[in-house]
Length: 430
Image 1 (spheres, rainbow, N blue to C red):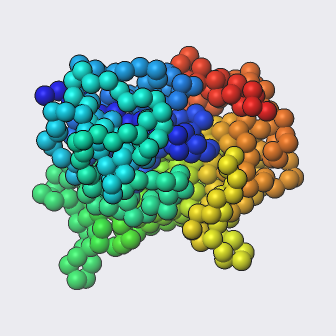
Image 2: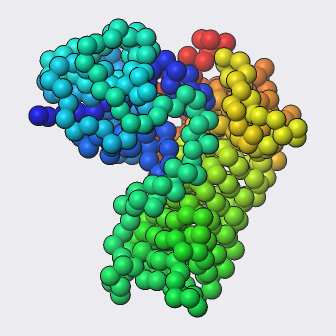
Image 3: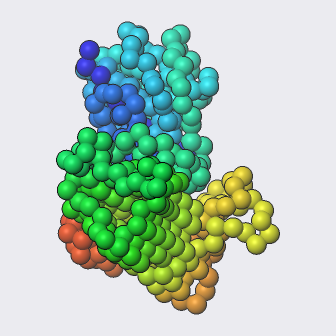
């Protein structure tokens, strides 16, 4: 039986600010994997694409299968439809021959649809928990993400679990040993190095009893300390780590990224990033630039974010109370004592920018000036206040294209259209 998996963004996922405006929720990272990658790995079937908001038609990044809108894909195969907010573990391999609900803790999170069965109505996809019940149902092991900041809170634990399980798949061990080269201490134990031709130079120091994985062409300078005690460290293909720097696991650094110095711990750093400073328990989706000092803690950055020199965020209130996040729906208690900022795609900050605890910065904003940005900044603002004018569309697109070209990435007509539709939706609402 041919089976294909699709993730869909329900109404709640489509309000996951500040990311939902410019990307499907399935493209967000949890641990070491994007949500769609995690789902495809769990189900073990071909992934067909994201069922997302109309404005995201044509969305595609890297090897992503892209967004599908206003379509009924794969009707001739057995389809598995799952909410992008549902994280499923160990799903059943045997699926019923009739349409069936997929449930986590008794709540509907998707459907199993045999060949020829129609998609659920759009209102049911928007709110699967309220959809009419079917006679057949499958209870799944897993959990449902209610709020986007849960991706931040779950990062250290999930990242460690993934990296210890060899996700992403590490390179082959060094030829000199059947289980990877091991530098041992006086007691005969110590951290293992799994490598594809890369090695640590004299003057670089490895601590802890976890595994350090070096991808092809990864280079670590003298004066770098790598501590695998708190968890594994994975440096992807072509990663460069400049000294002095301290890296603490669990840590994943994606292909082509450069660490220019500082302390980086318990974080996911996507491909093509350039980072320096103090970065703790954060997610940088990719092609982000933080090339200067400053603190980034318990935060989540979209793609193509540039943090100006000494940009710093707070992740703890002065009164130590739980952090509230302000979105277009108002202030929402997070239940978290520590939470930094949520920063959308293509955001730029000026030098010395200070970001409040739990700040939400909308996609495409360009922050500058003496004012401290408010805790919630709507998308595409030219300035640091909600009253700031919109970043002019042609100037925004020109800047995005210039920034991407500097990293050898082309702004395709399809992605240009996604950004343009996002801007127009904001301009129409103002």
